[in-house]
Image (cartoon, rainbow, N blue to C red; front, side, top):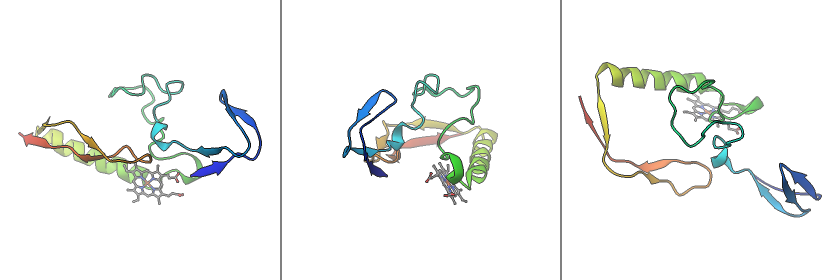
Length: 112
Ligand code: HEM
């Protein structure tokens, strides 16, 4: 994931000098306010909802993205059909990672 600049360069307003170590900060992928309106807010009816980077980009874009979306659709259909209420009981504990913004613990109560 890390590269070394081979020459001085300016990119997106940032200067990198030859020898600087440069990393892709995966966690910021969907948080670019220049590309996504209010990126830190959950807006369920966003226009252009499929324009995100969660499945990657370009030739290595996730091969299973349609399957993953289908699984999520089936999950939500099941939850809604059963009129399940999901009550969050505590603040999420995030995984200690600079690669994934994963939740490692989130206690919830399910009722119908
Ligand atoms: C919500 C679920 C999923 C997420 C968020 C996700 C995310 C991603 C991302 C970000 C990449 C690109 C990695 C890169 O650029 O190097 C990727 C690649 C890939 N994903 Fe997924 N994925 C999911 C589910 C799945 C499923 C269900 C399958 C298969 C059944 C799958 C198979 C693959 C494969 C084979 C690649 C590599 C594609 C390539 O390198 O050409 N993914 N995924």
